[in-house]
Image (cartoon, rainbow over the protein chains, first blue to last red):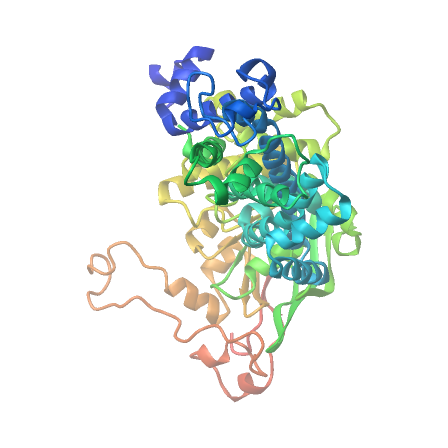
Length: 294
Length: 327
């Protein structure tokens, strides 16, 4: 309240870019670590041609099931293809599918949830019943049916994995909206003459961001694994394009004893992405909430 | 002077599973520009629903405004379409709420929220709206308005938030301001500041204020006229000096007797054994009102007639009406 003191007159110095980075590292060390992991994977995916030491498609009978060595840092698969190069190239498909499906599914899910929570009535009732039907089917079965009818391709894989996500996200957002709708600031916004649609977008939706981010980052991992299962069944992204999921699932049963590097390294890549995205998501949630800031 | 706000015969009901709840029945009052009308009564007597009815913010269904008119500058709000009503809200009639803690969106800066409000009603650029927001914060005496406008609600104290709410409500210079218990959640010194502020801005902008409160101290300080509500009905109305000097309705008398005086419990200026008077009993359920006077079960002066016949508002003194058989 004191406007007279010298302290209040003091203007905060505009922080420089480096100051900001330093602040972020101190405030969200885990989040920064997660972001570094994610950025590294995305860069690998974009510049796969330059980063990968060998051609991910060239087979070499002599190197079949080669152990990790100087030439094949992470070993080679049955056809003698370099595992490291395939993981780097596989980042393209795995990340595209994971991010694409998560963003698409969460986006549509959030919109549906917002509409349900805000409109209520018969619309809500109908959407809830439909989503119950969708949720009663296992994720993989749903995705299978969708890809089988659309045909295998990167785009269709993304769609097939995104659709089963919609009801899950919609439910969480709906329940959030139901309680937010009763908040006094929503009534106050009505008293200023704001339309219902604008209140939903300006006041309600941003307040559901925290659960949405947590949910979306948690889904990233399972989308990668769903893609793996689809690819394994021949309905994912077609061969010979490498994807982490397929590398893992193809070799898991046969080679886990004889050539464990075929299982460990793709699995490690998936775990790292899931780990990184969760750390980043948590920090992002905190950073986007003004109550958590200074 | 023609009244800015004219409410007549306002009735609001709620259709519930336990039957029809008559929350507001046949309430009428008028407020002139620059004047404050206080609506007093205890919890559950229809004050807030009256306020929400003025803004047409009663949830429909289960609520319904069944009768009456709410005229602002001659325009009957109850006859407007939803879109027209939205235009009126904020620009002609605005409201401030009891809870400054939760009545602001925690994720938007206060400057931003006032801007939104300005943009909604005035066709102006974001730049202009921004300036208006800062100017309004200055008006409500928030120090360093420029910097404060970039702060989030959680960074402000309760009093500051209520000031921001007032700034938002008055940003488009409404004719009528409905203040629903604006000081209840604040501590006493801040209460006085907020009331002074509302009074000053009211004089400056010529706003008519409907002040909803259960705090008679607040009423005595700010209001020109007082409406006393009980169980959804207006039971007494008079200018403030008149009603405090000579309350007719036993309910208003009871309310006044139930105000503690400093030192009374210690017997400093009153008899040592004097107990604070209360009005025994509670407000009757609004879906099961007694057939006679709704205050009858709690009234010390009730007789047989009060049980069967409901008293109408009658003039008891010049410019002073009350609804009681025995007053």
